[in-house]
Image 1 (cartoon, rainbow, N blue to C red):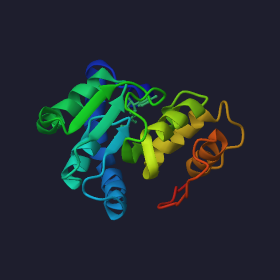
Image 2: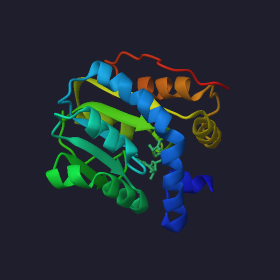
Image 3: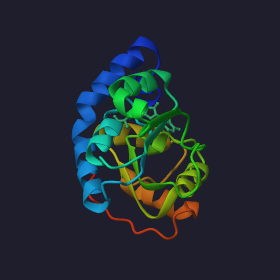
Image 4: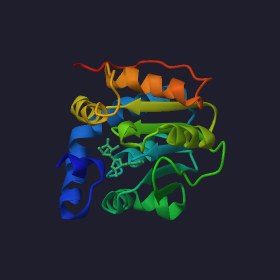
Length: 198
Ligand SMILES: C[S@@+](CC[C@H](N)C(=O)[O-])C[C@H]1O[C@@H](n2cnc3c(N)ncnc32)[C@H](O)[C@@H]1O
């Protein structure tokens, strides 16, 4: 069942998409208000692992002057749900959803002012360096990246990861370690905006 949350497929995957809409909306609201505090209304933003597409919709509603709200996700079921939720913006050409994974992002260098990565980071293929350098490549300098987790998803994904990484303290510390070790984000300022309750 957990596998369906990580790569939704078929009818069950479609149902999982609806569950994610209800369970993760609060996390999107929180991430979006932080983005709105820091980015202008015309910011170009990419969401990695957009799932059912509520993040893309909320971003398009907040950043009304943006000509590019983009997303990448490998799940065909999620792409269909996200496309249905964002039909108008896709037709206008201001929202672009592509099938793919974080380790190969089909956008030019220095495109985005912001990136959103919710309930997704630990699903990237190991080693994480490739996805992190891809993300860095498509971001402008001074871009804002928000990486967030709902508690139960973080616990589950970290459990999976702990088979290969021995000293996990919590998802936030592990993410900071991976960012630092990758070498792609040497110039960033890391700010913790919420806490992981164990
Ligand atoms: C747990 S869901 C989270 C969806 C949404 N971000 C949310 O919080 O509701 C994980 C999503 O990440 C996608 N995903 C899995 N592996 C990925 C990868 N390597 N790169 C980008 N997205 C990935 C899945 O298809 C799925 O839509």
